[in-house]
Length: 426
Image 1 (cartoon, one colour):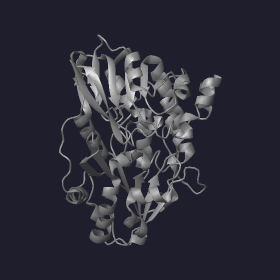
Image 2 (cartoon, one colour):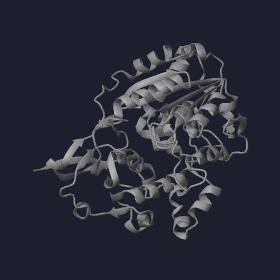
Image 3 (tube, one colour):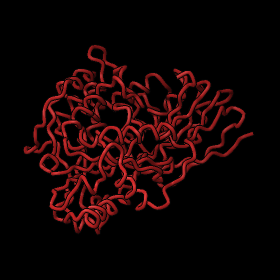
Image 4 (cartoon, helix red, strand yellow):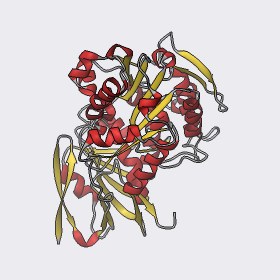
């Protein structure tokens, strides 16, 4: 008997009929209670932080404070709900003046947000009271902090470097390169120079073979050169206070972990594992997943985070059916412009000589498409992604017909951008 399964797709949803007897399981994160009183939970976290004095003791009247937040690509963490409360805490509980606070959007290598997006990120009321600036990784006034043991020269945003206190607000989530997002990533890559970011992220590749470094991956922290390099960079900031958010699969805030730049963030990562790690006995012939809808599937660049997670439940050579709207196409030019050297046969040479984050993610997606049969329902033109090895469809019935699911074992993952399947022996 076929059963209806509904997946988020862009700002709406799509429904697939799947033979129930073929489904091994539907993989979802654990049920967790969303935060009911955000102000109370945030203030409690700030007053009783992990391995740190309370924020009202760390910050004081007259301090120049830099608040580092994520950009619009991570709006799902809903920092717009947290920022006004945090500013209120600093002004009302600490006595900091609005003019002494600057909010830095940690763009990394991304293009800076327009004014309307900045207002969305921090709310219009806060935008009118506090200066909000986009980080520029190519700025000429970036400040050198030191060089890590990985030979990464760390240069960061001048406003943050000169602040009396830097508060980083981010979300812990799985990250295919750094193990987990959030935390120290607010510094590197968040507010670092282009060269700092490129040198760090180049560790994503094996030094000799043109393939992903075996030391990196979702949830991998120990021995991960990107993570360890990022931690060294963050440790150079002697005035750092971290706030890490955790969400459920519907992007409701479920946890706030504040305090020491490393241990508080690590506690948030452990909470992510508790919620989203799903144990499986075996891998499937087919995985059907969504990115979780907009903004997670606004582009191929953002949406393929679901691929990184979902293939952990897939047999080698298996089929991944990916529901990704892609209203903004491939996404950042830094990602999709790598189609040119791919087609020209100069990909490895150019990526090693001019490594970029987007370039590596593009390479990873090609690497994944070579190992698995990726079939994507999307608004993205099929001819555009064909050189990558990804099969794109604008007709869902045609995709399901071509997938030929009869007799094949299936996992359904409603939100592939959050859930990570792990074999029980792992």
